[in-house]
Image (tube, rainbow, N blue to C red; front, side, top):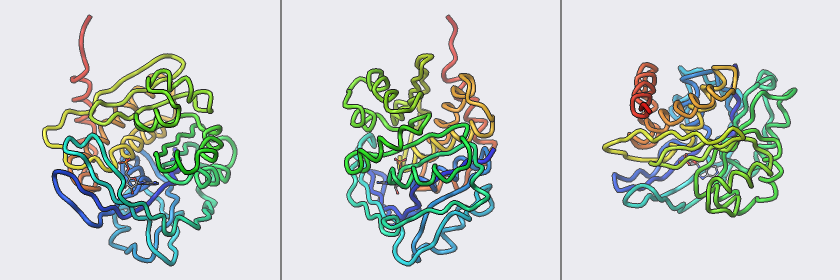
Amino acid sequence: MSLLVVGSVAFDALESPYGKVDRALGGAATYFAVAASFFTHVNLVGIVGDDFTEIDAQIFRGRTIDTAGLERAAGKTFFWAGKYSENLNERITLTTDLNVFADFKPKLPEKYRNSKYVFLANIAPDLQRDVLKQVKGAPKLVALDTMNYWIERTNAELRETLRHVDILVINDSETRQLSSEHNLLRAAKHIFKMGPSTLVVKRGEYGAMMVDKRGVFCVPAFPLEEPHDPTGAGDSFAGGFMGYLAAAGKANDLALRRAMVYGSVMGSFTVESFGLDRLRKLKGNEIHARARHFAKLTQFKL
Ligand code: AMP
């Protein structure tokens, strides 16, 4: 099943206690597409500037990622700079330069319009909606991620987009910010009134929690001795989560629970190295081995 994603393709400047890079390939849609491509075919929608070279585009080559929807425009690629705290649990944004995204008017290639699974990765909510509108018929599943940047600047547009979304996949601080509720279960009730019927909260080293009308399901984060860079872990989680669901072709309770595990697996790989370094080298058999490890990690008898 084809999975469509729209979101940022970016250059990032990253600083963590483990090191510093001034310009690494990144972006929400980049991490998402690479992670999801281990499970299914991905149709990528985004825009890059003329500073984005064929060497940068190599990240998408040799994978099941269609880049017909990745536009190239005159100007600079989206740029984001962030800095992590000592324990990697908090980060501050130092710079967000939308650059070519500021005037992006996405036009979906005809072959993308039948996508049944849609992921609206982190980017302006009106752009997310614009892409969704161009998908023919009713997609089977629409999920969305967003960030404090958009919650603060484009709240009304975000709420309009959320009306068309089945699953909201965001981190814990953004869940609280969007719902004005500290408690995540109460936050979920608030968010269900905005449109989504499922909330997936990414909680960094504490794992992820899914809430829907059936109840709550939690997965841990994979315990790592040396995490290096959490950038893109959330997008990789979403890539594993949606990639698994698109490949399974269903979103019942069992499939959603497994998708949570594959999301956590993909996020854990990304954290192991800077930027996209770990995903670049990743092999499919490592994914399945780690998923089995998750089963062991969480197994117990009553
Ligand atoms: P994550 O660590 O999964 O939350 O995502 C990190 C990625 O999000 C980085 O590679 C950034 O390029 C991208 N990013 C940061 N801020 C924004 C924003 N306001 N809109 C879209 N993408 C962003």
